[in-house]
Image 1: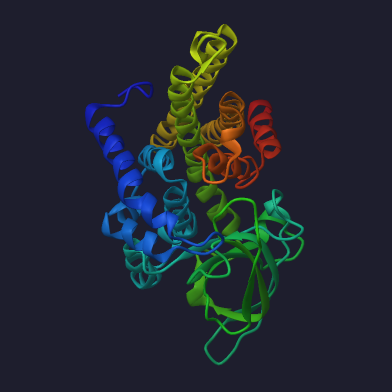
Image 2: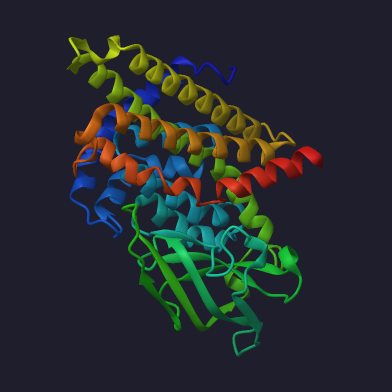
Length: 373
């Protein structure tokens, strides 16, 4: 099926997800506390089978999930996406024992996962991470002591386990990083919440000689950067899908508002400056959606240009969502900035995706590198 046309089953599924998002998940999200993990919301995602589907999803399925949920409930979308981001290293590189221990709990919404890559001095430059994993063999066999900090970690400090990327070989750049699965109750691991503009939980983690062993390694020693990049290549287009979902919700609200709101003797939509603005919003949103779908299909097909397509999709879709939401606020006027208004909520939510999982500037660097390579 061409990327520009979803089949009837996909369209029906997306419609169902939008309805569930608005009718069942939105009320649970409204009861949650900003900056805290909403476990009843996660449990509902588990009961609906969405977390289980997430864990086995291809890139296009993941994008449709995120776009559809974001249209009605950004908190549900983000809760689902963070479970996937934290768990995908386990899905792709975990041992059978690690998967059996954690994945059923993640799918049920009982265990909360987190992806611990960013550091105070290594955000977008993931290869520069400095969390030290110092080799120390103990009575249980070979192991490491993790010492250092992680910051800007979604779901921290309340997650139940973390996929942690640490420096096992000093001075080796991307080749000296190992991925570890670290339960939250491991001695020496503490965390602190960070109050942010967006409502989902984000925090910092402190590792004070946290012991990890061979059974905690995800994949191979010194090959963790590949685990991180494989995860990000899958999730970058779906960040774009999240952005498209928000842009679509803002566009829909704007169409309704400009058709009903009267000014200067008629509805706003009859003003050419307004109708042309809405046309631009719709065109950019559709272009972003197609770019996201194309990147997702390329990932699912194993195409060689996935890094470039993923970067393009995230770059264009997140920048587009920022533009569309901002334009929607402008066309609504002051009411859109009133606490509790849909657009006030989207205005806070839309900013962060241009930064996390590789900022806009990093995506441009990736694209240029791929083009010249």
